[in-house]
Image (cartoon, rainbow over all chains, first blue to last red; front, side, top):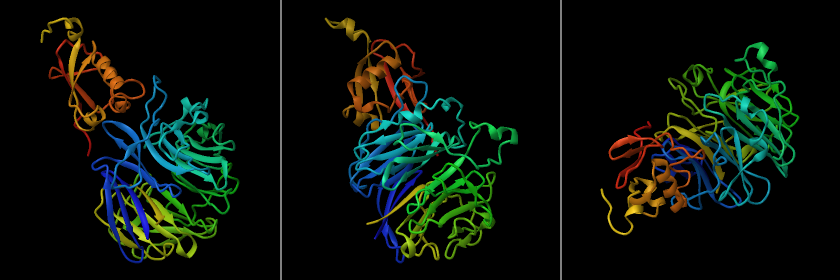
Amino acid sequence: MTELVVGTKKGLFTLEGDPADWFEITARAFEGQPVDYATRDPRSGRILATVTSPFYGPKIFHAEDPAGEWEQAEGVALPEGGEQALERIWVIACGETEGLVYAGGDPGVLFESRDGGASWQLNAGLWEQPSRPKWQPGGGGLCLHSIATWPGEPDRLAVAVSAAGMWLSDDGGQTWRRGNEGIVPRYLPEEALQDENAGRCVHHVERAPRRPERLFMQFHGGVYRSDDAGESWTAIGDGLPSDFGFPLTVDPADPDCAYVIPLVADMDRVTPEGRVRVYETRDGGASWNPRGDGLPAEHAYLTVLRQAFHRTGEGEQLELYFGATSGELFGSGDAGASWSTIASRLPPIFSVVASGR
Amino acid sequence: MTATGPDSEMMAATATLCLHGPLRKLAGGGAEHRVQGATVIALLRELERRHPDLAGWVLDERGQIRRHINVFVGGERAGEETAVEPGDRVEVLPAITGG
């Protein structure tokens, strides 16, 4: 049984089922409100959801049962009396020690929880970066959207901020340094490339768990791989119909494997040629193969957002799931070889997180 | 409204704050709250002090009214520094927005 926790523009949905069979919606929560991201912590079984009411601001809620009572987490705010307010929480990720959970948000902030998400503290090291006043937001705001922990090493962290680029820490987030060498923002004039504060619009980053020094990145025009824990990056987008896109995921069993969902370009953020295809590499990005059997093959101009692609399992049992702003949700139980439509009339999908139950 | 009696001085600075939607539950379940304050922002701060679960819902970290919250004093759109008269009815409403 697989559980999908789906954040949408109009609430949270959970679905349960089997990719070889069918899924059913088992719960809906936060009706009518934007749920930017939601995940279940496999250690505690707790579901954490980020909700950004257009009226009441961003909050994190948690529950044991998505159909039951939700509690508001404490501490999800910037320092009182400052000049900025928290705009949105974009992602939640489990840390490498018991109860440790991270949340990333706009304006380029990282929160930490040591009690499984009930209470949170702002990461001071990133908040107090001297260059912060020069950071440039992307179209979606100054969002910290990717948090790559290092399996078994809680001190080693990589986070990505659009458009303040990659930030790396070797001391559990006390200090941070940039990790953008080799990234070429094609949207900047050449003279601006030397300016480390000029926008590095990272869209999504994932670490290869079995070779943690390897990371894959979907950039705002460009797909990249790092083999030195995010210090430097090599372009691997050749062979894709477009190297623009938002989400990315990996097969935990294979450090050479990554999946992306290309969109036409930054000025036309839909699937190319009216066809929906996931592209897979099994050689670290040297080559890419389309994985679209069962996905819409004509007249399909979908947009898949950065948090709306996820996986559970690995190797031959790798399951892949993604949702589109059209409200369609797709799944594969065979590592992308074949796909089926799991739901077709959900609200616009912001995030998808899959887990084995 | 004219307040009378021994507490008239305090009552004279008290208005009725009217809450809607999820704010009612966060404020202990009541729709109307008698709150003392000379301005809209002072009323909202006092309400938040009385009901800590409201923290962050109407006022953000900067202490400002959230962008899509509308406040009306006596039926007229008000800002943070709008003066509140004794007996005023102050409505806190979500704005007409969204998609």
